Structure formats: C-alpha cells, structure tokens
Amino acid sequence: MSAAAAMDATAVSHNATATAASALGAGGGLASLLPEVQTLELLVAVSIFVAIHSLRQRRSQGLPTWPLVGMLPSLILGLRGGDMYEWITGVLKSRGGTFTFRGPWLTNLHCVVTADPRNLEHLLKARFGSFPKGPYFRDTVRDLLGDGIFGADDEVWRAQRKAASLEFHSAEFRALTASSLVELVHRRLLPVLAEATESASGAIDLQDVLLRLTFDNVCMIAFGADPGCLSQGLPEIPFARAFEDATEATTVRFLTPTAVWRAMRALGVGHERVLQRSLAGVDEFAYDVIRRRKEEVAAGRGGRSDLLTVFTKMRAEDGRPAYSDKFLRDICVNFILAGRDTSSVALAWFFWLLDRNPRVEERIVEEIEGIVAARKAAATGEVEEELVFQPEEVKRMEYLHAALSEALRLYPSVPVDHKEVVEDEVFPDGTVLKKGTKVIYAMYAMGRMESIWGEDCREYKPERWLRDGRFMSESAYKFTAFNGGPRLCLGKDFAYYQMKFAAASILLRYRVHVVPGHPVAPKIALTMYMKHGLKVTLSKRDNKGSRL
Image 1 (cartoon, rainbow, N blue to C red):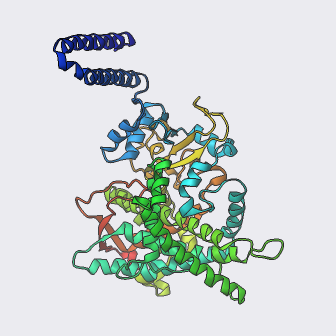
Image 2: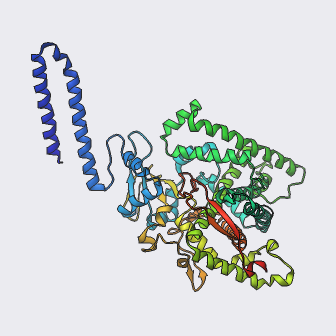
Image 3: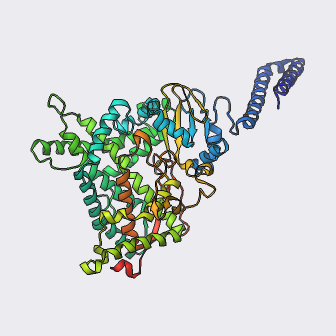
C-alpha cells in the first residue's frame, strides 16, 4: 500500500464515522455511542498505518520496524525457533554482515550488530580508543564485576592489564597452572569419569563435570583457594552455585530495559532478588579468602603465586596496600568469570562435535598415541592410569589444537560481545555510528559466514587450520574467540593448554558417546553453555597404544 492508499483508507474511515453518527443521531439516545465509534475509527486508522509501515520496512530493510516497539516483535518471532544466535546469523547474512537493531521507544536496546572482520579490526584495534566497553555495559555488570578488568576502561583497565600480564608470563605462575591442572585431572577428573563408567546408569553430564574442573582450576589460580567442586559425588558448592546464579541474573539485565531492572533492584523482586542473594554468597567467600590471605602476607607466609597474593603484596608509593579489599574482590571475580567458562564450554561443544564426527576423533587419538609411543613409556614402567602428559608433549598435539580451534570457531565460548562509541565513527563497510551507539559483534555468526570461511563454513573441519600438518592461526578479527587487539585474552595460551591436556587425558582412556536423543542447544547467557548440559556415556578405549 502507498501513502495515498493510506489517506484513502482514512477518508473512508471518516466517511463511515460520519454516516454512523448521522444514523445514531436519528435514533435519539443512540447518539451517546458516538465517542465509542470515534475510538473505533482511531484504532482502524492506527492499524492501517502500522500495517503499511511494516510492509514498507519489510521491503526496504528485510526486518520490520514497528511504531513504538521497534524491531522487538521480529526478535520475539525469531526466538520462537529457540536459537537467538541462529536468528542473528540469518539477519546478518541477509544484510551483508551488519545491521541496525532498533528496540522499543524510550529504551536503550538500540544497537548496531556486525560480523564483518573489517569492522572488528576497526573497533578492536585501529580505533580501539573510540570503542570502550562504555557506561551501559559497566553499569549493567557493576554489581557482579565491580571495577574489574572485564568491564573496566581507560586507566583502571590498563593498570590491571599490565599487572596481570606480568603475572601470566612469570615462571612461577606457569608452574602453578601446570601443577594444579595435573592434580585436578589425575586426582579428580579421571576418578570421577571412572566412577561414571561403573554406575548403574552410566550417564554423566560432561558439561557439568568440565565446569567443575575449570572452576576449581581458576579459583586456585585467582584466589589460591580450592572450592572442591570436582570431587567424587559431585557435591553442591555454595560459592559455585552463588557465582552461577549471579552470572545468569546479570545476563538477564542485558535483555531488560535499564529503568526496569533498576526498579526491580530497588524493590528486590524477580531476577534482581536472585542477584542480591547470590552476590551475598560470592562476597562472603571472596572476602573470607582475602582476609586470610592478607593475614598470611602480614605474617611473612605469602609465598603463593596466585593472582590474589600478587595483588595483595603490591604497595602504593606511601607504603600502604595498593588495592582495597573491594578491588581485590573485583579482580579475582573477573578472572574467575573469564577463566572458568572459556575452556569448559569449548570442551563440551568439542566432545559433542567428536560424537558427530568420528573421523576427527580417530585422527586425534592417532596423534595422541603416537606421542605416547614416542615417549617409550613401557621402558619407564608407566601404566595407563599413571601416564601424565608433559608440556612439550601437549605442545606437539597439532591436530588436537586445530580440532579445538574449529570447535571454538563454530561455538565460541562468548557468542557476542559489546562496545560503545564515544565519538562519531564510520565503519569500513560504510555504517555510520553516532556517539553513544552500542555495537554488538557477533562471533557465533562470524563462524557461519560463507564470505569469511567459505561454502563449507558450517562443517566441522579441523584441516582448515593446518598447513603441512602444522597448526596455523587465523587473524584475530576473523577468529575472535579470544577477542583481539589490546584486549586480546591474556589467558589464551593457558586456555589452549588446559583444553588440550584435559581432552588428551580423556580421549587416551575413553570413548565419549552422547546419549541418543539428548537435546543439545545453546543457552542465552554471557557464555555459550549447552542449555540441557551434555549427557554422555563413557567406554574404556581398548587399544595397545593406551596401555603403554
């Protein structure tokens, strides 16, 4: 319909109303119904306008923008399919890799969404200073993350980044991460898996087990404390439960208008009530560890290499502690959030992909067994259960490295991320960005773009990462699972080591089978959990290589 047609429709509506009014007047008391008829006229006119507007928007943009509610109805309809990330991918493909989402009137849900590597290099590197996390992101996560590195900008971010970078590259820290991982995998993970093979049902939620592994590991590294999540019987740990609930409640804020969640916080209702309760549990654990660590340092017993101890020892120019207890809490909570999910979520999707691609699993096992054979373990008296991979052996697992990278390409642990524009900008693809615009870069969608990865982009194909049998990395603006530019993930190397060590230790000993019919879908969260977990059964691998 054209604008002229709309005017004709409105004129018809007016004429109908006049005729009705005349008839009602002739009927005497029926004239009192005139206001109701006028209201009906208004509703008809508005309905016609909305229909015309929707059709025009659909023709011009491919995604309708409705009066008052913006594109929200389209988003809701897209979510009916159960996968928001696939909906975003479809829209981005139809719009050439970038589109503007307009939320409801008087909300802060407007943003530009992109999956164009040129745009990512622009915002993550070339114009890094113009694209901070921004006040919207910072305010949304502040209750959980405070002033920690995950949401910080400017000098606060730079100071933490510099201190953490020095620590991550120290020999003491590398020794701590390696030793704690060996302890967790061989004294906890493998016994838990062995117990599962002997249980009546035989099924276990592998995602839950892997989350427990990485949660314990990152707590050891960040706090120097072991919460004991990965123990036989898989006990409920109050701090882990509180941290999980706080993360989920914070995610809901991003899907809620700011004024609404702030009002809910003030009233202590809904997901904000859950957040307040869970934050109390997080803070109780964190401040107790901080208090005990400061006592150790004061008594000269601060010989640990974890992040909390390092930051606790730092002093300002006047000799006083450089950081408050609140800031120490923020630093550690941020590193737990960053370090817990990247490896565990990636491993869960990795094992699911292996179940669907047995050819890839066979090649990984061949590579692992070749490394084990080269060690000549039989001559040292090692047996299967005692074999511990050495760092140089893990480094030689090239195909496994490629297979994990391919899993991260298709299922990045952080499916979307956020920036905010501090001054007017123009993306390389021509998209105009006004000051204050929120920018969402969609890593999940990038892995499914034929323009980036070719026609086979949806295939699980580790070979795309190999050149003459050696792993070759891709541009951080094409493969953004670990971010890029100045905010490139500090723990990237450790994450790969952790994933390879755990995966190789499992695959050397077990075949992992996803329970038939188990539903697998991503959960809408800060990280790409599987909504229903990953139910698997394990069978012991029966070959000579694993018994060296």
